Length: 201
Image (cartoon, rainbow, N blue to C red):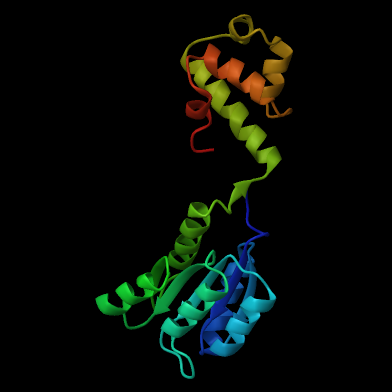
């Protein structure tokens, strides 16, 4: 199961309903969220509380979304920014990217579009990871699939890898975390590089 509770999100939109809806969706999917309807307050909020990803509306009074993007990036250049706009045009998109936004999403958007865009950014930043128990299960499943594909018994893999059948069984069942050394022995015995064996997990 992917872990997201450590990812800090900022939502800036002068429409309170949009702020509330977007904030609720993100919170329900495990993100930590701050919402602001006042752009200047949002910029001050970034000074006080670090965030990972900011969702910023383009058309706002007081400060435009472009100005907010610029100010947020000047506070912390590591923050990834997703621009929300009801009026997409090439010039605005180009300008937001020049100022440091990573992507933009067109309003009105569906919940799954929003989550996919945020997830993509979080993945690119290396912020989403799998909890240890689930990772052990996935590694074990991958090893078992590869072993069966090659028509190898646990005993045969044990002889090749110099690990006991009991150790291999525990790894395949996801009961124990295998050391990097053990995983390297297993992957080599299956004719794979370790990175190949773990790819996509």
